[in-house]
Length: 236
Image 1 (cartoon, helix red, strand yellow):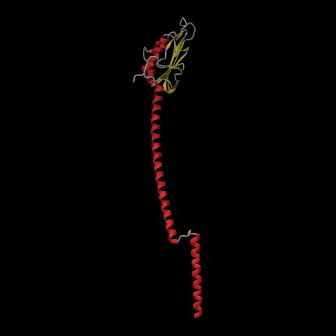
Image 2 (cartoon, rainbow, N blue to C red):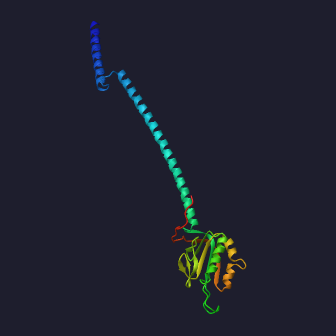
């Protein structure tokens, strides 16, 4: 019995030494010389630091997202302003004849009669250009939004006048047949031109060929000339 106690004591001493050695080894290898309690505290501190950094990064991301939204909102407002200005510019360009337009309207063809001597002297509608001016006036009064003659856009500065045996439109000489296009309410313009004792009747009475045709869609070209104000100044 005494021998057993001695061996048990020796085993306990050896086990204690082994445990102490193991703790020393773990402390030196895994805990960097710190006790488990110290290492736990250190890890908790590091976790708290990481959490704080994470929170700061989240706040920074949220702040950047708000800045991005503000920039996008500003860009959107600026884009809307630019779009409105562009729409207004295009509208004024269309009104001034600087853009090609299309829509329902009317097609008028005027030509000289066959030269068979039926009307005595040879007729030339260019000599009667004032009839063309009257027809343009009727189209304008009927609400025409765009007019062209032989692909020459009629604007506020367009001249229609005799030039030899031809007719000048935007300083460009043109010859019959004259193809006049007008965009607007086709029924209103047709009625204005074909009214009794109206311009179409006057042109036919002179012996010229004239045809008026309402159309669902017709294209009027843009004014391709140049003009600038020499005497008129903008009033502020």
